[in-house]
Image 1 (tube, rainbow, N blue to C red):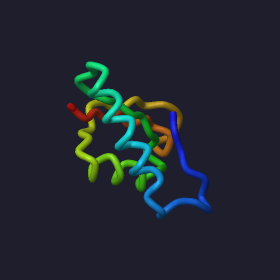
Image 2 (image 1 turned 90 degrees about the vertical axis):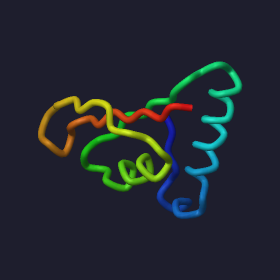
Image 3 (image 1 turned 180 degrees about the vertical axis):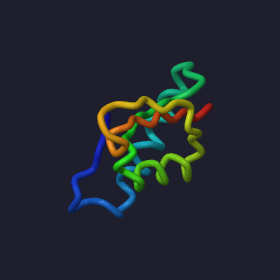
Amino acid sequence: MGGVRPEFRRKGIATALAEEQERWSKANGFRAVFFKTRNRFPGMIQFGIKRGFKVVDLLPKGGEEDYRIVMRKKL
């Protein structure tokens, strides 16, 4: 799980964290990384797509805004 506090967003922190996570994962034999977000966070969905993630599952929970979106990126 990860996140960046609102006052520190748009400074490349999330990208740096994601790059390190992917580098570490690949170096340690992982073939893919996953993340899960909610429909109410379109910025996170866009972030994932820009980083090469694909939507692989949708988990209905509560109202549509709370549906979970599962994304995967092959390394």
